[in-house]
Image (cartoon, rainbow, N blue to C red; front, side, top):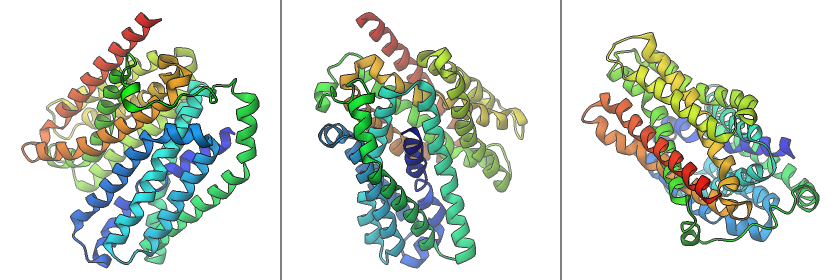
Length: 385
């Protein structure tokens, strides 16, 4: 079961960076402005938010296994659609099932692991996503270099997704067996909660704001790192790109290491440790030095600090709000996370037009909000218990 879940999360990460890697080759072929990549990205994000909010309803009706299989199938079909798209509107059309599939499987599997496995597996689950997100651009790069075809890149990842769909369909009896004998009834007791009902539970609003702030920090940090190094630190573009990539390497490696120690230290302590490490990393970045190794290392440190925050907050959800409420709340948390990661990086883009030097300050504001919300949530949960 764990192997299936890990494989599904690798597949979830595989397509995430394809659009960015392929767009320089796509937009001249489709005769569209370069800025139109943002339209496709926003459609995907919007549909992901919608499916995250409705994951609770789908899982309660059909179960985690069928929802996972159907979601991966949707992304596979969407990727094949991307590979044959001859007009820009076709990309927009295929972005809809892509986003719907990605959000549902994300929320469903996160809740399943939070309910049935230890914290270390949640960390390694998100490490698997990082592996997929790292491998996807390499697949696209290979197809562009060897086959001179971005369509082939999408098609290749689509084949992998279709193969995973077949494996998931074949394994549906395993999910049913696990549901009947191995989960102590946790999945069966899951409630369907509307958004306004979930928001009435003490601590949910704080958890949503923590997710929003953290994801705003992580995605803005990764997206604008290279530009900050070039425009503010005076580093050559090719060197900056290499250092900026280490931010994501820090997250992926950190989640692997987090899985080793998280069961001993518990989720709340891991979140606190991660946020403290982020603070140290941002302090190193914000130092008013030019081409300095301390500032560059600060990006890696920040990535390492990001590693435990997301998976540990998710894994703590059933313990904070009850197993019966976790699927509904995790779905809303996913929606809040996608909202932060979608809208906060473009907002910094506007600020960057004023001064790119605001980059670490902007990230620090989200760090402070994340710390405030997670500690407030801890106090509310402690008071309730």
